Every structure is written in C-alpha cells, then in structure tokens.
Image (cartoon, rainbow, N blue to C red; front, side):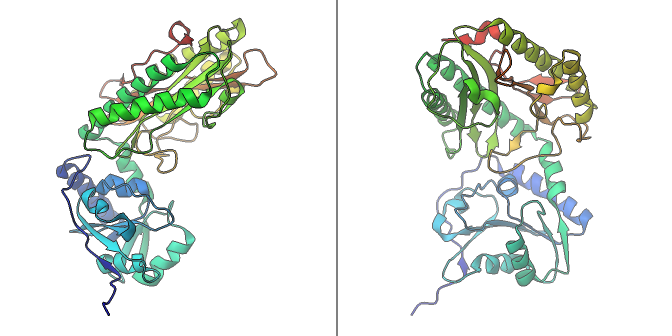
Length: 401
C-alpha cells in the first residue's frame, strides 16, 4: 500500500504571472527588511491580499487554508490539492501542495518550511482564533509579531508596474461604463444593465491581458431607492423615467481592483435632484483639487466636510471620501490606512493611488431623494495628482435613455 504524503510538489506547465520576477523580488526584499526591523525570522501570510501581493497567486479558499511562508532566502506558497498545478503556475517562488488525507496537513507543510521555535510574523487582522491556535501548536514560536500594518503600508506605495496595471484597470472601468450607458432604457432591469457592463469589461480585460486569469469583475447598477447605499446588490427592478441611477463598474485584473462610479438619471431630472447632483459634483471637483503630496487624509476630509456644511448637506454624507487601490476586492483586502476619513492621519505621498468619491444620500421623504455618487481614481505625483478616470461625470453626459 502506497504511503500518502502530507504534502508534495506538483509543478507542471509554464509560469504565467501578472508581473516580472524582479517585481516580486523587490517586494520580498522590502518585506524582509521590515521583518528584520520587527524581529521576525519567518513570516506566514494567510490573506488573499498579501499572498497575491508577494507571490502573484490569488487563491480560492472554499473553506480551505492557504498560506505563503517567507524566510530569509525562500518564499513558498502552500496550496490545497484540489487546485492541481495552478498555484505553481501562477506564483513566484516555490509551491507546496498539501493533501487532505489527514487533518492539519496544511500546518505540516507550513512547519516544514517555517521551522519551529522561531520568531514568527503573521497577520493579526486575518488569522482566526482557530488558526492562531494551530500556529502555536505546529510552529511553537518563541515570539509572534503582527506584520499586518507593515505590509499594508508597503502595499500603499505602488511600483511603476503596478501603476501601469491600475491605469489599464481604470480604462477598462470606463469601457464598462459606456456599455452600461448604452444599455440604459425604460423597462430594462438592473440586472440586464449590469450584465452588459460586466460582459464588456471581461472581454476588454481578455483583449488587453490575454494570459491573465479572468474572474471577479462585477457591476453594481442601482436605480431609484436602491441607490441609497453604495454597496447595494443588483436587483430585477425595472427602470422608469425620472429614476436616479447609480453606475458602478469594478474590473478585477490579477487581483487588482479599480472602479468607476457615476450618478445618472433616466431621461429627465427634476430641479431638486439636479441641485443635489450639482452640489455633489462640486464637492467631487473640490475634493480632487485637494489631493497632493504632503496633505493628510484627515485634512482633505475636514475641508470637504466644511464645503458640504456650508451648503447644509453634510448631514447627508454617507461615508469617507475615498480610499486606496491595489490588491483588494469587495471580499478581501483593504488598505485601511489610506482612506479619506476624519480618523486617518496618513500623509499622501507620490506613488499612492486614491479615489475621490463623495456620496450624498437624501432620504425618501425629501425632495431629490436618492444616492448621489461620483468616483474618480487619482495617482499622487510629485506636485499634484493625476486623474486616470476618463468617463465624464455630471448632468450634461449622464441624463440618458
């Protein structure tokens, strides 16, 4: 009877990655410096965002654990047998496949690379209580060091290769926006319009990136009362003349998120709604003018708050005014240290990418009811910020159908 291993190497097929090997080596070199400063001898990453950032591999968990172990000389992804050789083909560095013949073979593979009794870096914002206990049992660390903040700070500053991918993503988002605009008509369902935008983006990603993996791009297209929340799911509500509409496209390219969001109206817009829309557009333009190196997220937020308060609209603000971009999605990742909120003191630096997206939600009982939101992506440079979103905003282009 053959002995069944706890883990093994399943390496087959050519390697295809979003970036050149040198990009990953540069990220790992920066990480290892941060590990040394923190006193971590080895790091175990378990989140989708950090595994993808440092290796290129974006896992699909389905309840299984995945990891990336980084030592002074190695980086090794740990993946489940169900994935075959795909993790090897899509990762930088080594890969071990663990089997499911016995419980905790994942941790046996991790321990094989990480060793025992060492100072272990981990992600305090991702490791569950159950997996934390497993880490202690299998690695017996002499110290545990939370690297979540250090890795988040690294991900905030984009390399030229990342900026090129983000620019492409912004262009794909614009492409999806135009497909949505073309699909808007009386009687169409939200889902019909959303599918038109999603399909257009996925085809455009395939055209631009013929060797990529295609998954996770989506559209939220909301109408009427459904516009009151930024993340409200798509429904089968049918569009009616005079409806407020919210266009939201989210292309995903190799784990990198970009977005386009626009207020629209179907055929006509009443005076009360037009006044709110124009005020939100003015806040959007003012906010974009504030984004430059040397200013803090809190400072930008305070100034936009004052702008809206002068117009008696601040009470309708829905959330912070913008956030970072990169390896993130609606179900993984977040560079929470780079958000335009009152409690974030991060200072903008060249190489950061951030959105400007003011949203006003007017309750159903008031004139102009609905959610108004504009969203552009800006790259912070040496002297200011470059807007890489091309789709027009405002009433002149977005009263449609």
